[in-house]
Amino acid sequence: MPHRTVTPLRHGEEPTADPSSEPTYGLLGKDLAMFSEAGFDMQKIHLKRNAPIAQLYEDAIKYEGAVIADSGALINFSGKKTGRSPKDKRIVYEETSKDDVWWGAVNIQMDEHTFEINRERAIDYLNTRDNVYVFDGFAGWDPKYRIKVRVVTSRAYHALFMHNMLIRPTKKELDEFGTPDFTIYNAGQFPANRFTAGMTSQTSVEVNFKRHEMVILGTEYAGEMKKGIFSVMHYLQPVKFGNLSLHSSANEGPDGDVSLFFGLSGTGKTTLSADPSRALIGDDEHVWSDSGVFNIEGGCYAKCVGLDAEKEPDIYNAIRFGSILENVTYDYATREPNYEDTGITENTRCAYPINFINNAKIPCMTDHQPKNVIYLTCDAFGVLPPVSLLDEHQAQFWFLSGYTSKTPGTEDGIAEPTPTFSTCFGAPFIILHPSRYAAMLAQRMTAQGTKCWLINTGWIGGAFGKGKRCPLKYTRKIVDGIHSGQLAKANFSKSPIFNLSIPDAVEGVPSELLNPEWEDKEAFVAQNKKLADMFSKAFERYASECAPEVVAAGPKY
Ligand SMILES: Nc1ncnc2c1ncn2[C@@H]1O[C@H](COP(=O)(O)OP(=O)(O)O)[C@@H](O)[C@H]1O
Ligand SMILES: C=C(OP(=O)(O)O)C(=O)O
Ligand SMILES: [Ca+2]
Ligand SMILES: [Mn+2]
Image (tube, rainbow, N blue to C red):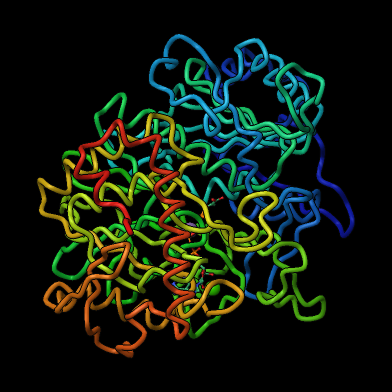
């Protein structure tokens, strides 16, 4: 790119507002025509494609009220919505995907016409803005299976977020980018029209597989974009490539042993995968292909509530220039983030490129097959053991059940840990029938002899309100025991009702902690029965799709 000579501005002077003087980063001819075709008024808007981080900082500060934290991270705010809005997520009903989509409460239908209305509304809104940001990048580290993603947004903060969360293209890849495989139009600052047919609120997040597009209206929570692309991969990877998409983190030990950590939001994927003795492959979204495991993303999105430099040093140290702190408050005088403050939301976050984690494995993929699969559950009932080993049928049963608790903040309207059955440990993001993912997982685990562990990162010694959350330091020891091979060699005893195999000892963990039984034994049994009944009810809808052994692997009394 030729050097631009810039006349230094005097204090308080504005740069010239001539759009043609701004770099369009190689967006020429055919690329620009794509935007005109999509409905953008190229005479009017000021397109900034893959703008440098510094420029996104400047714009976010100037136009969006962002500030720079003492560490150099950018602090920004998402406005009214500070978590995902699963009830406002829609999938367009159209002929190319309709027979594959699992329609229902997770994948709510939207007709093609309504999509067009919302799409136009989003683009019309973007056309009213002086600045429109474009980020072109990739989803999926394996070049064989990656897709090209374009994000078009009115906020510099959203562009920087996706710069961190997608895989950043090289200059050459950007020059040769061509037509994206998927485009997000994020007009989250502007509401959906509640009177548009099929809209139930001012928020709408919609995916159209035929048009390869996603439209966002009425929410500025940045997580919608990354989880939106995840949904797209939950469709494309199995349907187009026969690959299994996973709501899991992944890391690899020095000897090449790979672990997957499945879990719904707040169960510990990000926290537990950041392990100084193992290389981080990714913290949230992966694909298990024929040749190994690859990360979908180029960054991590960590929760900041209670973040502590000592307990979570990798994450703490990743918060620096280029990272985005979302909805974190700060000390006005020192610009120090206040991770204890949940005044805006419990769901405070930081998004950083994965290379900000010291021992990240880059490229974020491995040709080793997973040796251990760990299901993370945050049990608010306080009955599940901190760790247990699942057999093959239990592994399928627990995956389809997806029992855990929703933690406050990540989804709109959750105020305290709320038990839920989130199939595949990620119901909000799956597109196909859960049995399709479950079958692929079972087939892969059996073929590889992968061990399956259930870890309760939630309450022990009593339910939420009475017991306590299993201390993180012990969960880390349990994970260490799995990785060292020590746990697989332990003696196991069976838990009542749930029939889980509990190891008798884990190095560094008090043995009494491993047994979930409460002091009040009667109350413990009653609570087990209550949860077992919930399991039976939740599993009814999958029973006809599974082998009888899988159904029988559930709790009984
Ligand atoms: N025993 C535990 N294991 C894992 N996380 C725990 C534990 N106890 C408390 N936590 C906290 O719970 C949260 C887990 O969130 P996170 O790792 O972001 O989950 P996910 O990535 O699955 O959404 C973190 O704030 C972490 O500090
Ligand atoms: C960003 C999210 O994922 P997680 O909480 O699993 O990190 C989310 O669910 O909105
Ligand atoms: Ca924490
Ligand atoms: Mn996470």
